Length: 330
Length: 290
Image (cartoon, rainbow over all chains, first blue to last red; front, side, top):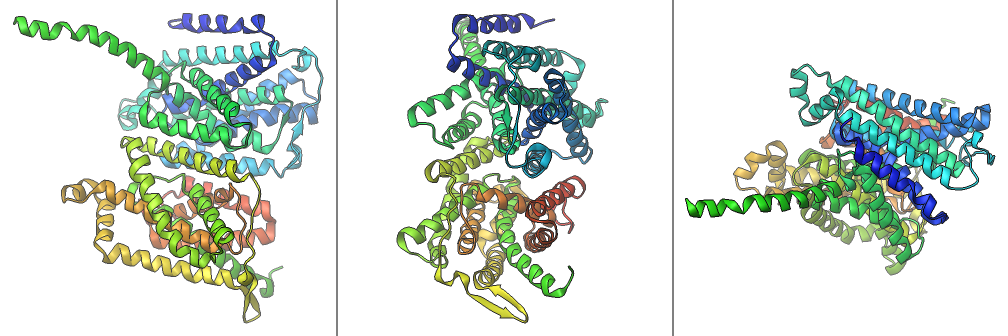
């Protein structure tokens, strides 16, 4: 497949980190970067390629996390199986919300509002329902065996998170080059024109939302398994909806590597803020909010856009040089 | 369960709460009607206004009803500045960008307050906050009766501004036909900022009405803003009378369902109504707006 080499190369390179260092600080940091990259990649498919801005991706993240945790703790389901079912659960929630919203023709602000509202309903429901542990949250019992998806060291978690990110990169690259991807971009650019050419916008958006939700749910499942604890505020809280859109926006919306670059940049900024001002609640989100406004104002195409802009600038500089000379000669 | 002794006070209290929802929604719907954007920073700005009213009392001893006199113009200027110097320039004229910028503002304001004041819940103790008046067999809290009255005065004031002043006419012109208004010499960027300022000023008044009987925390605005969204959608986006009626209606629904279903479920019932409305009647129940 075209464009596979940079993905495999990046994965192989980043995959060597646990062999070089066993520092839990470094590995924890990178695992969180991968987690946010995955959440953001889900958002990116729907928001970046499809142009539908969701403000409630926490709905999918939280569903994945809760399904994984609740199946293990209340029904004794194997952790790996729970992980898979969690992804499916997220996809089901995504397609349900998508079917309702797109059938009603919700776009733009309305779509953002309705996704936000769904996430809030799920958050409130999870904070009162007995099965989710209500306000107390759900703990996954410590059981350090690979069969239980728990490991003695951080390294296996690191590789699994990286593997998930790699799989999402390949998936998005494949979608980008597929007919479905072309439809999706067509719907983003001009829904009426796309429809006139025979694309069914509601079906295309629904497909994108289902896959998007599944990717983000995978991150939720991983979160539950990695931290072994979730509550309504973590799983369905607004923080994850914000990180979901921040990563691709900062990295480069509608690009394959945008969410990963963005997650790395955003998380690094968050850590720097913490180093400078101490671990105070709210500080990281103040930084994220400022970054969000700045990116929209100054670099709407994100890091990828700035990089390709620099490259394009250098190229056009070379190409532009001969023109005045030619005019002089002529 | 359905005895009028309980039902009437529940409905009356719902109306009083609903009036404040209506005021918050009024700001939101005004901004939507003119700028055609949903201001996601509305809740955070309400929280900021409530903190301002809290500190006006705690630091300088201003009664919230007095503080409203200077907080309202202050928040008008804040709103004007935000739209003129941050949201407008940052959005590059794209609706999607406005969504993101107002979301970013919300995140910054809310978390800056969280960082500065922690998640503590604060209240003020006003001597007159517990006064009640008797209406028939029902006792009504005086601050809530004041709130109810002030909201209608503010709505009337807004109506006069919109209908009878040159600025109001310019606002209505921009709302109807932006390009045409611009061609007739109206400074659209200025009118946008004035509208945003008016919407934010509504929040300062709402905050001063709420603070005598309500608590403040960095996330207090969230509770109001989703209700305000519901009210705005219910009343028709951009409709001032719709916001008033919608606010009162939601107040009563919340009060009744909270009474019969318990608080958490009462909260959910508003969200569920909101989602159903968005899905099936996005133009509003009263058919206003488009």
